[in-house]
Length: 313
Length: 255
Image (cartoon, rainbow over all chains, first blue to last red; front, side, top):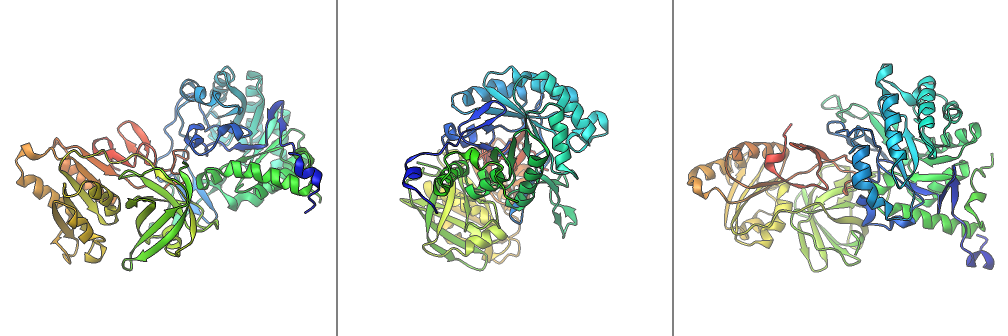
């Protein structure tokens, strides 16, 4: 490890820029794994995070799916929470004031089951003080088009991203579904429709069967797979999107430690989000930030941007 | 003081083929747990099993935390392999606790449910009418310990190998029937399998009894973020880890 006396003294730059949004470091929380920030504020200093991405919001509250909603899998878990949330208005009134106390940008994840719902949620969130960017979850079905998942049908996806793009001046991040044949193509569609950045991967659809009951374990039958089990798929997809699109990428999928985050950054992600790891280790994000800094010092880099997309193939 | 801490395994005693008692010594100052609260525990740092598991606090003394558990799946099996000196990560104390009883109370335990109620019994010695049921004698874990600190004990097993043969909720029903109605207002604390708690809800229905139940659900985070452990209540889904694990039984919708 080439530790020069010089690099030992200097703290490397960890800050990155996502579509004009300056982050003090590239580590954010993944939507749905960090509540509205409050839940984890007793475990870590929220000021230290690159950004906080909150639990997905819809224009009206959602009660979510029946239970069981989660099941553990080898090195992973399936969830079918059903996007339970308090709704955009309650978020702005009851949760956002708490988050405004911190010197960390808040990114509001949102969704809808029609284009109108997306537009309304985006409008309300864009006008809220303290929301610095929007992350659009397009992995939900469109009730006006036979419940086709927005993010798996290029045409529907283009329509909904275009519509939201017209609605907001905030940086717009589109969160891609990995349940597609060509992730690069999907990324291009989002980019051409006006996305400022892309985040990936959302969970991969999976199922676990209770063999004695001969029933799926989850009440929803299927759920989204997350955790270390999905990481190689996520890294591969980030790399494919990096080659296909020009806009910045936020990479996620099974990041448990700094080394995992580095895989994503090297493959082309400008920032990363930590999800399932929060459940197991509430301070995972902080340990990853510290681990990234240590890696840069040990490897003699002065700026994290030097390693982003530096993959040699 | 952080609720996320490292702890050293003092010992991990096998009580019989089903049950073990894990004693941990936290390596930093911790919050004092209240009866009914729980911890998320995990042995080892491999990713399989990936998630921590929730365990009620069984006993807390000075700088030690004890957990009574039953080997049931991957998580508890890996916990059973912990040896003296092994360090593990823990999160807790989490959730709410049993409201403090003022005077006598009823404690209703089904099987391993005794783990969370023993902490309550120990805090209020000789105040409890203990109702403790299990499948058989072997599964009445910590029976003597529980009896010793209770005012009166009523024991049942499914096979009659200890105490009366039958359901513990039937025994409770008989107890109520033997009392004049004016004697009902003893608060009731219960922890055990869902079928027992569902029966309990029928036993106390229509009676003017404060009845608190500690619920168990699969959890991923334990801190209110994942929304995996919700249960149905009259005011919508509530998180067992955050609004619970102790709920007033009259708000629960049993499915």
